[in-house]
Length: 98
Length: 417
Image (cartoon, rainbow over all chains, first blue to last red; front, side, top):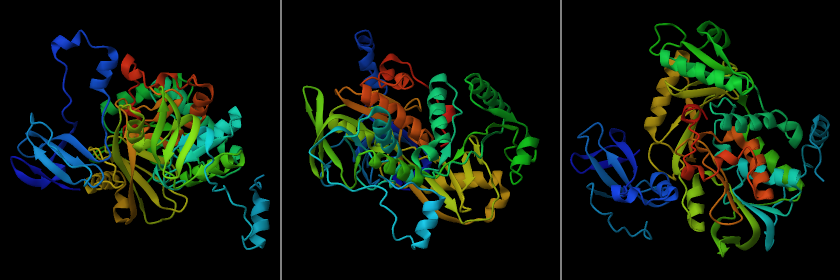
């Protein structure tokens, strides 16, 4: 169990939050739909990074403000390395140190 | 030649104070190259090597295990075996495994303590009952045993269960597979390891794969913590770390790794002679031969490679247990642990080829791989030996995420492990 610092409410227990899986997966634009192969759709829909290390992921404060945000979290230590707003690019994190 | 295990060998060795038991498998140094390398010395990997040697005559095989045999998910699951799956593809695959389970102790000359004590899935709502009927009839149409129990029949089989209509989640019925049950998970690993070793397979423990040698899209061997080992073919059977290994070979998988945890109670007298699962209240429980209740439930929602689960999951499943079996509220839990499972978007495994030539993968078993161990190894050995998927494995190819032919088994696999 760990604490997550909601950017809007502060540090709260993990079970107040819902998990939104991998962040920064870009939905293709309608113009791209027609051009995309089935394999490219598979990459977008199903294929995941699933790293052993720093993972950029989405969380939602379900039992609080109900707002979404992004988190950089280490998948072995569960240490939260960054919390940042939706739409912001992933921060640079020195993965060697972690 | 391995000594045969029997009641006579047990008596003979007992007279000798058990000082002369033969080693179950060797611990050789790796050779420079093999015909086939299996990455991952869990039940599925060991079974793969065993059937490669036994059924396909391929004995120049190494199993590379980063830890020790039986130390990963093989020794961490809740030991449940069943084949009550909804869709034809899964039903055939898991039934193939169940049929192998039924002869496994004899085949391996190793007592895997396979106990067909039956497996019961409870229904608590009208909608549960509708889904349960659909599932039972589909399973019966595939020629697999499955039946529907009334609350009175359930009460007779499991007297400790709270079947009163005033229960918070009243029990309206259950599906029951009498051929399902449990097996001793360590013995499965040890039996396959011994059988594979007897046929010439090298089991190399404490040997972690750190990379692949791939030339012109064809795998040539693996880099390990014990140096480079060449291979004509490589099979990857590493469960939770499948994504990590795939990353080394340069492709991605539709998997997420999550912790799944289990716990056992203090040992008590025989009280539960079947397996009870409740997908809705969300717990499953059986009693081991030592008398401990073995229970588990769901995964942590977030990606993780830490072999430990979160306390809220434990709390939820213990609440569920006490709802179903009020008498169990007095029990103390003795041990709790976690393993990393690789969950697939359709809750079905991936078995077959990869974008790299001669590199095969068997993964995505998620929360329910133990029951499939013999069948998984059997079809994967065929797939590696022939270079083409076993007929039962064809629908489970990685390509299904491109074609859209998903095998949605969330109903069968999402809860019961």
